[in-house]
Image (tube, rainbow, N blue to C red; front, side, top):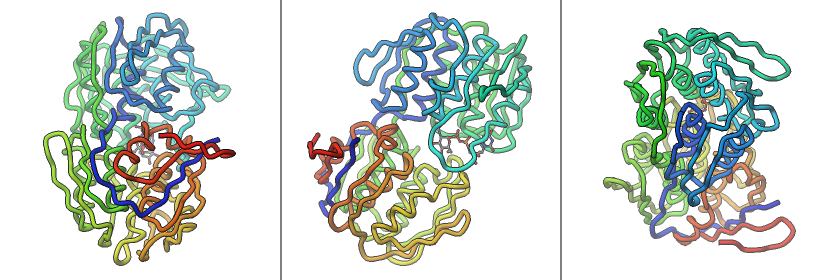
Length: 425
Ligand code: UD1
């Protein structure tokens, strides 16, 4: 067992380089199943979620070769059975992308109900509705979703909710279907665009990704390709928040500033200075922040995956802020942890009312999920004294080398084994 130990108060100065996007990687890696050739993927983040999806593909018979820690070569030709059992998928929500990829390739997918972060009901009705409209039938048996089609035919699909997962899955299932599929009310997240670009680099015909109407003309075959994944918008946002909490002057490199607009706008409203360059942003903060209200929304709105980190910042802002979580129905479990550090937050349904205090105080806390863990890091960097964060396996799912990156800009952070204090860079 490991935990993170952070002593707050050090200002952060220097440069942090952002890794490839987790949510793009976990969609694009399963998408390789659709290829008739070998795919080389670059700028892949070295994180636990990627290791898990790699392992799932390997156990299914694909060959996954690590060229270096951020590049992979995947040959999916050895996959014989389009089946992913519970012991393969249980740790990971994005394993539901195996449904679309296997169905698109083999016209059949048996995938166990997925795991992942627990913030309320995470339905897949829209994914299944999309598969059904393309001509597939499904049953749920022994905790497995079993989907089958004689043939997939392009069609018009209107998603009842804006869902990243359903948009990805329908794209994967439709890319080799016969004829044209139109997805209306599609998600517009940067990783949807990245997936479309990846599929097109294999020979697919996907248009409109990044808008709410995606048109897919089915193709018969998809070839191998080399593709580099976009930078991680949420990792970048988390480090921007870290600088705001601790105070300092840091250049966040390898980002697409346009993807950060909603985060940048909120941080500016809180009094932070942010300069944008071609592929970096500079964040300058005194550590003293102004209150603001935040409502999470699908892209291009403020991302729900930055909600806990911004709430951590607002807990020491000047005045009372209201955070409205409008995407997930149970994403305030981390509030109890922030309260241990002295935060004054009350939760009423989808609203968190945050009364800013002068400073948080270090305490033993838990990472209740991935972004909740990120919020604990943000809070700890500005807090008085030392914070110990447990259950960091959640953080390791989505952040590459968090200790190294934060240490390099002057944070007092170390990873220790629970029984001994072994400091690791
Ligand atoms: C993805 C992200 C996750 C992020 C979320 C919202 C990945 C791997 N994960 O999750 O980090 O928090 O987008 O930006 O990319 N819904 C339905 N029916 C469905 C599907 C979803 O009602 O069939 C609802 C959900 O309950 C939720 C909302 O739609 O309220 C958004 O969910 P969705 O965009 O699908 O999230 P994920 O793809 O699971």
